[in-house]
Length: 66
Image 1 (tube, helix red, strand yellow):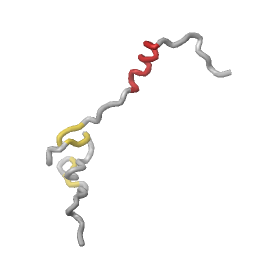
Image 2 (cartoon, one colour; image 1 turned 30 degrees about the horizontal axis):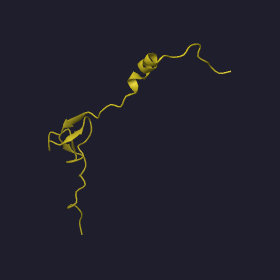
Image 3 (tube, helix red, strand yellow; image 1 turned 90 degrees about the vertical axis):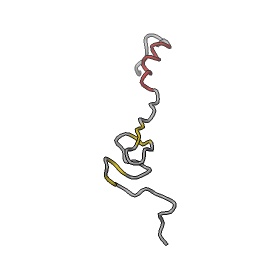
Image 4 (tube, one colour; image 1 turned 90 degrees about the horizontal axis):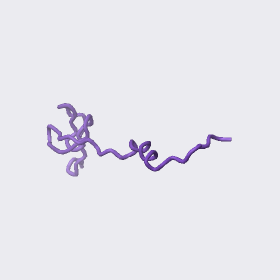
């Protein structure tokens, strides 16, 4: 037989156990280059820089060559 509870878990104790299950908001910081919000410790999706270096070229609508 599996593990069975001896007592009912009260709503408050159940809530105490689940206190860490809430969703966390993304930690946004302003990009030093373009001032747009970006995730901390991530390259900027708008300008493609990370710690002052260009790490990728951002996708733009005018950037495609014919």
